[in-house]
Length: 280
Length: 133
Image (cartoon, rainbow over all chains, first blue to last red; front, side, top):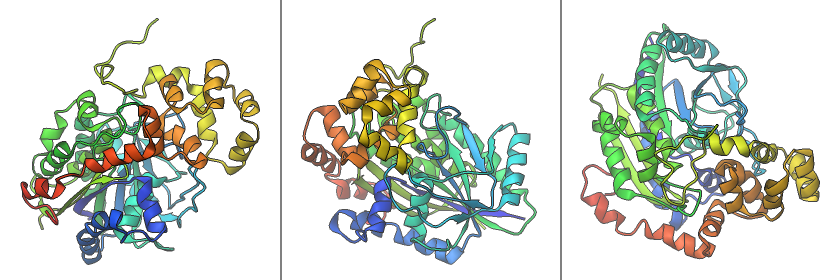
C-alpha cells in the first residue's frame, strides 16, 4: 500500500528559481534562506520518497481566467514547464504517474471532492521552485511528481478549512492505493506577502511564526480563519498559505517536527520551511 | 444588478481579485495572459495600440496599457500575476511595481521590505525549535 512519510512546506516565489539559476544561493542576501533548506534536503535524501504530490497554485500559465478550477489534479505521465512571460529557460520535464493520479481522482470524487482532472498540464514556478529548492536542479528529476493546483488567484478561493479537509481526503486516497509507494506532500507558497496595491510590501513576521507553529501542532487553529481575515493579516497573496493545510491534512494528528526554518524578507515575502514526519 | 459587498472590501490599499474585477477587465487580463508567448510579446512591443485593438482592449483600459499605468490597471481589474507578465520584461520588477503603487522609489520600497527582518534572530529565539533561531 502507498504510505505518506511526511510533508514539507516551501515558498515558491519566482526569485528563488532565479537565484538558483544564477548561482546566487550563497550570496549574503540569499545564504540564510537557502542554508535553511539543507536539513529538508537531507531528510528527502534519506527518506527517498517515490512520489511527491505538490500542492501549488497556477499563476496564469496552465489556466487562464476563462476557466478556473478550485482544485485541479494532474493525471498525466509527464508535466512540462514553459515560458510564463519572462523568457526564462524552462526546466526539464517532470515525470508523473497517471495510474496513481487517476486513483486519487476517483477516491477524491467518491469523497465528494469534485476536482478537475488534467491530462495536459503545464507547471509554473509555483510547482517548479519548491522542487528546485528541495532537490536542486536536474535534467532528470529524482522524484515522480503529481501536481495538485488550488485556486488562490481568483476569488472565491477555497477556505482554509476546505483545504484541510481536502488534505484529509487526499490521505485516504493515497493510503488506499495498492502499489507499494512512499509519498511526500509539499505545501507551497506563502507566507505573508502582498504584491498589489498601496499595501504592497506587507510582511507580518509574528503571524508567520504563529502559522508555522500552529500548522505543525494545532492546524485547526488556522482552519478557523476566514479568507478575508487571512488576507487582512497575511496579505492578498499570503492567502496561498491555505495550501499548507492541504499538506497538513494528509498527515497524522500528531507529527514529528523534523525541521522548522523561517526567513524574512526574501523577495517580497516571509518564507517558511517545515518538515513534518508521520510516526512509524 | 449589483456587485455584492465583501468583508475584504475595506482592507486599505488592496484590490482583491474577485468577480467584480475579473468581469470588467476580462479582455485586459486576456491580453496580459497572451504575453506568455514570445511572439506576442514582440507584437505588443512593436505596436501596443494595435495589439490592444486586436485583443479587444479599448477605452480607458487601452489608455492605461499605453500609459503603462500599473496601479491604474490594477484598480481597473488587472490581476497582479498577469500584470507581472507585462511589467517584468519591461524591467519593472514586482518590487519596482510595488514602489510605484506607493509612489516611492524602488530603493525606498526595498529598504522598507528589508526592515521587516529587523530583530528576526531575537524573535526566533523567543520561540521553540526554529533552525538557526
